[in-house]
Image 1 (tube, rainbow, N blue to C red):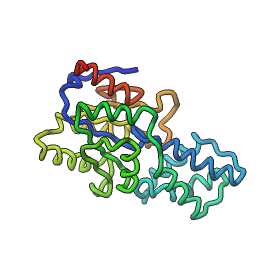
Image 2 (image 1 turned 90 degrees about the vertical axis):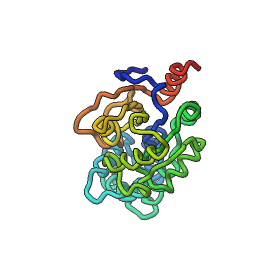
Image 3 (image 1 turned 60 degrees about the vertical axis):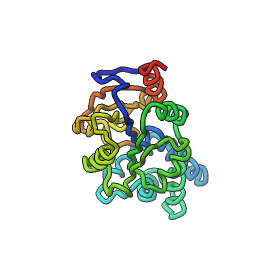
Image 4 (image 1 turned 45 degrees about the horizontal axis):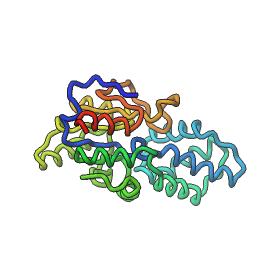
Length: 243
């Protein structure tokens, strides 16, 4: 499935910036995996989607930490909701499991295809230690990578984007040369529109209801490009370039 309202063709861009967690990396699957491991040990039934809602609410809370370290704190909220023991070992298990989250099945192939056309830039709200693991699993496709340890802030803070714009400017480019690609309406699609970027929404949860573990936006932003999977963007780019 692919739709577009964009005036700019995919051949107009030199750079593609990416949200990583949720777009390239299946963090929701990792959260469910970690909770399933704990639940099996404790003999407790945990609904994965319901747990994601608790996690999402926890990420709204004042004092929320950086991802994925904040999984320990968020696990405490989930444990209370489902009657699981809240122990340091289980908190660390959740951090470690999400730190080792796997790419979506199409991510590595899609990134390899896109790397042949564009300079790829990671813009992740994950910490550097986790991003390095994710990048390795993806086949090290990035020309540059920005994490919360580098920027000192999280998306959707415009300052995060400005640091990327400044970096691209040193390469002779501008935000007009960037296609911003992400699954999160809250962290990426809305703010990229406000900043005048062209964006591509990868709707990973198209077959599921709600926003899962991602913070819900105050309002929906109609994207310039809309795909259900990253490989659709990669194939569309190949078609656009005539390959």
